[in-house]
Amino acid sequence: MRTYIDANIIYNFLFTTSLTPRARGILTSEDELVISPISINEAVYVSFRKLAKEKRGISNIYDVKRFVKTTDGLKLIETAFSMVLGLIGDAGIDILPDEDRAEIIKEVVAMYGLLPSDATILATCIKHGIPRIATFDSDFEGINAIEVIR
Image (cartoon, rainbow, N blue to C red; front, side):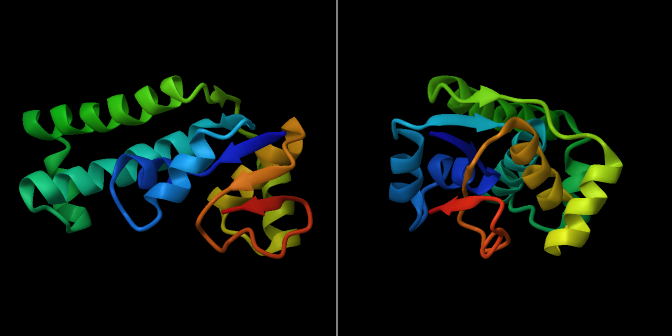
């Protein structure tokens, strides 16, 4: 069965947390795993934030924005990209295009009470006929258009 991989699954696989074993189980399942650019971008962002905090002690968003413009910051965000894209490749996750029609995303926001990023993910799943999403967030709970896998 096709399953969309949310950014937090990637994050919890790459960085050791209490959810790492579950993320590992999801990413090594027999499901056909898919992701789209919006979740890749989110995974790179949260990975970069984690690396910036671990390696440089930077946690304030404004300091992170300044840091990414430096040589060291650019190297670190490249590391985050490499980690995320490497995992996607190693896990055999297919990359699908996002739903990009604003009117569709707006309808999904109104219908399900989601923020635009989550609405884009759900609209992408609907567009591509993906019945399940693997996520540790509660944002998709109770939405009959998609089954949540944890």
